[in-house]
Length: 328
Image (cartoon, rainbow, N blue to C red):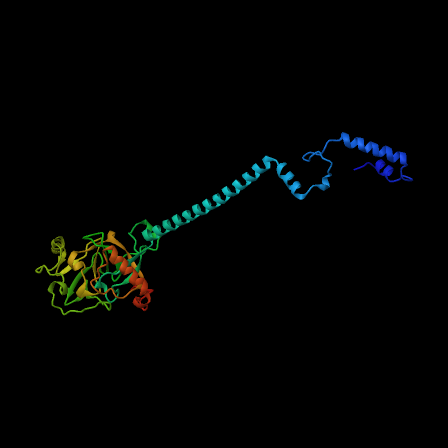
């Protein structure tokens, strides 16, 4: 920008220059043009900058671009790619952590709170049917320790339905009803259960056969060995007094509700308190069609066929009147 003095001087000429001034000016301009070099990037011909085409200008811009700017652009692109990869990696890591957290919670719940079981046999009919799927409350019963004062525990009571490890083979799970608690005296006379000399009211009990099995229907009988394991037979003889079986401390006498078709304490003995897992809480699903021999499919092909059948017939085979039913 010109200074104020220059602005003033260039704006107040009284008249146009004289011919001699024009001549001298043209001569000076010619000499100045001869001495001044051509602009950078342009050829040294007589064309003015305005006479060049846009293509020439674009080529000039490309040729004059700084290589460092191209390197910077490449670095910016690489940074963007790394940022995207980092975001994807962060999402995958977050998903894995969420999945692991869910697995840990599920394992904790199954180990300490509730666990799902399926009824495979008719020994608890009609309370529990083959094809019932149960949620078992594992926080119900306490062990008589200090934790009983802080947790919602209670002792096992007569009439409770319990899930436990089968004493003869702890890998198997059984479900039965508690008939005798520690200290009780248990006896059966013509299928009628007597506890401490009094008949037990059992509206849940089911009988399907006549009273023709001496050992089953009149328990305990020391003169008949019909079905019990050898170990139980020896122990039974030591615990019978006046025709009544005395339940020892820390053990329970259990029976199935389907009295004529139940493999229970009459045949293999007491359930140790440590073997009890919990109490069935609810039937969360019940499916019909499993009333046969109660055996689960063993081979992979049988399991796949069974799964496909259940998925394709789920609405037809579901016992809707038993689903979400509380267990008593």
